[in-house]
Length: 176
Image (cartoon, rainbow, N blue to C red; front, side):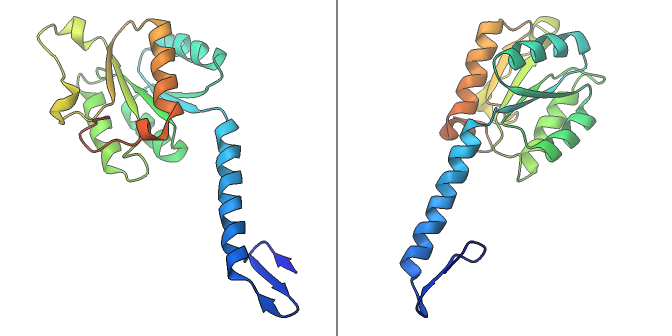
């Protein structure tokens, strides 16, 4: 007799713990294989709806599931619900520093703390003196890209950050 819900295996009144452990391991592997075949989910948080639509079309044509939010508050709530594989985040939205606060709050949420984040912003061209060093630790993103981002670069970075579990796990300083 095999009971899947409790992994209980009995044969003539005997229980076999070694088989229970192996069944549990096999189910874990099957779950991993199943999730590997599912498309990765990317959340875009940006107030420029045209830019969002263009990136959404690009990413969806490459097999990603894409959701979006047009402000930081909605984006943070959607991230908590969705738990995406990658977040593309603008900095200057309705407030000049809105994206900074979204990213800081994401890192405080356990379910989102290791989610890879690419900051895509025109802040470098709007504020030439402003530079963010990812290694500095005060803005824990995996990557910073200046808008407009080349489509090939965005796809390459999305693939890199969503394909390897080791790339997705970062410390609180955002170092890879």
